[in-house]
Length: 64
Image (cartoon, rainbow, N blue to C red; front, side, top):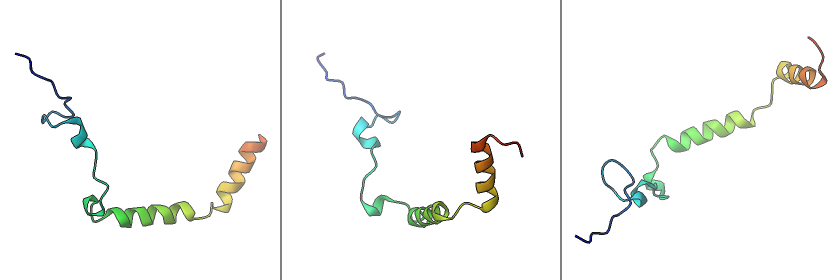
């Protein structure tokens, strides 16, 4: 009984390497590109003036 043990990556008994997602574009869900574009557009939006003023006051230690 000299069996080699494989590392188990999940409860299904698949090897640990099976958990790594493929980097091929076909492996991405259809909505992934749209979500990335939406996230990028939100990140690129300027900070509202009121929030900028509030952050400046907090940095200065002023009470509002």
